[in-house]
Image (tube, rainbow over all chains, first blue to last red; front, top):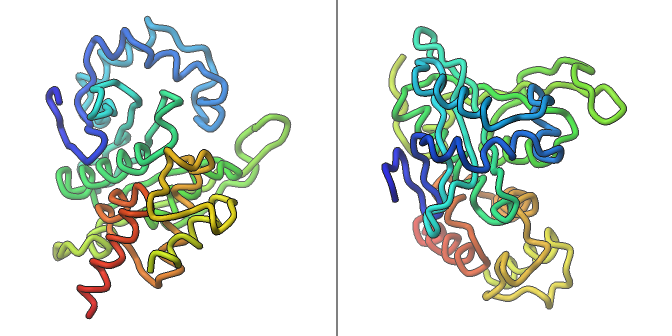
Length: 189
Length: 78
């Protein structure tokens, strides 16, 4: 492992490197299938724009971007982030993308999400992790169910998906609920 | 325990019950992709009346590890 920020059984998360930005990262965010459910990622991505994102992420205090690395091969397989971090109210948004197709089977996305939530709640002391997904994205719905996110609302027919407008589902997970499920004593507020 | 886990795995993976045993894993069952893996986690929780912690969820990588996890939890409950 090289500079792990948080490590699990199969993957670890670390700060992105310039080499990551020069690699296949930009291709993942151009790929039609990968970006279908990424509601803000419809324009072709380039290595130049990936470099710009990487440089900006290094200086950001409201977005923690982490590369997802396969422990066995030390290969950069995806990216995840906690974004829109509000340090006053202690909430943020969460997202995980496994870009390399051969790693979309198996435990990688589940473990990356588990490590990211642990980081949000235990390391950064976030109180609420928010998320949203496109209604009809079965994988996204199920990973939210696995980690016990609660649906807290939806915006009807917000997104255009291959010929029809579909709902935006808004979900949230509290630090208290996460700690309770993981047998960690919640702090008093 | 193992038989029940195998039945749940078979149902989620859409394969005959006899096609799943203690050695079954994503490597041996082509249907065991990440989507079905997550469905399996939820199905195991429902079938055994459990709510799993994150590290337990992550440890569920094949039939053998699922059975081992459930046996550990049964010992803790006993």
